[in-house]
Image (cartoon, rainbow, N blue to C red; front, side, top):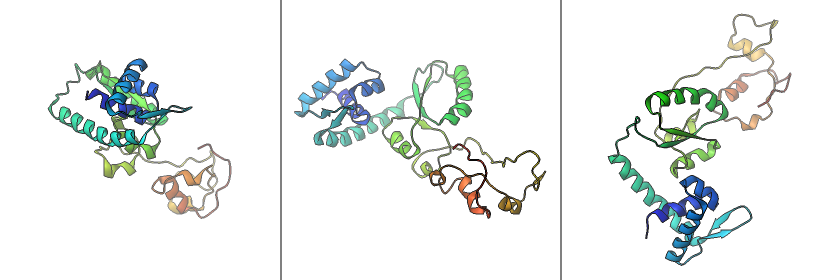
Length: 224
């Protein structure tokens, strides 16, 4: 079997669409459709069934996907071990996952650095929900995730880029808080409500602050 067909099956399986798989593979849609036809003849199975929103895999396709994805991972791993990365000559496209705020904070210095050190390297920004990031890394949908992602640390190679701190914002001319803010003063102060308390993870500073409050939240409703 042509090994390139394994990547086609995995791409269609992960994208749920031939056209989206073609985009991910940087191929034309007819080329991917032709490869899928070859693969169907090879395994004597339709592999994917068309729906209103794309395609769904057959049981045989799901079975092949697990084996093909592991085979691709091993091949890529072997190639990476012997490949020498030269940023000056590389034309690789890196897929990075980050939020809107991440784009504002991280992307400008990344692009400035690449312009100087790796002028032909391209960046593809993906916005992926945090619960789906580990899976996206596992199946090589992205190369890197940037952000405050403590849940991924036990399962990934990672580096700390910087340490940030949080501040309290007060109205001008606050009657009880001036130049200093103690924990007791913070507890006694009123706090504006947030729209979705349940959406904040227990480990975030927001929920830690919530546990310190004595008075109920009140005041203006702030956007999430």
